[in-house]
Amino acid sequence: MKAKKYLIVLMLTAMVMVLSQSAFATDITPTAIGFDDTEETAMPLTPSGTESFEFFLTNANDVDWYKWTNTTSKVRVMYAIVEGSSPQNFYPEYKIKLPDGDETKLFYPSLTYDDKDWYLDQIVVPVGATVYLRVKANGFDPTKRFYKLKFHYHSGLNTWPID
Image 1: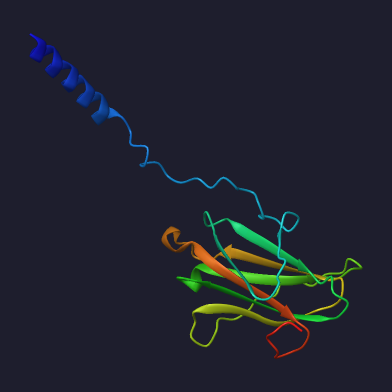
Image 2: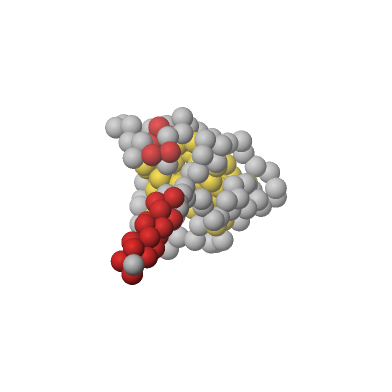
């Protein structure tokens, strides 16, 4: 009789476990939805040398905004590289907002010679101006949604290290 009760409890436990959903079977939902999705909520970049950040887009309509303000006392030249497993999956753009409120339109870079990375290079940033970078989906593929943003500024054209 004890064996029969033990077998019934074991069978009921197995049935409950089979019918329950796995804790690992749900989709991942980002917890920072809405963060850096507009120009007003752009993530500030504060480089000390070349900075590298890894991000991802959540869907075909997601955009990520970043900004850097030239708080130095000199005109600076900015470089940014957007790379991913499939760069055609992303489309970076940039614009410059001057201290007096005037701003440029969004500019579009071209792919590198090997079509692997997007280069936004030799962007001249006046003192007090803010550069806004926007990365958006282009033919979104959820398996290739991660990208890396490398950012750097310096004091002159064609010179990489910060002086």
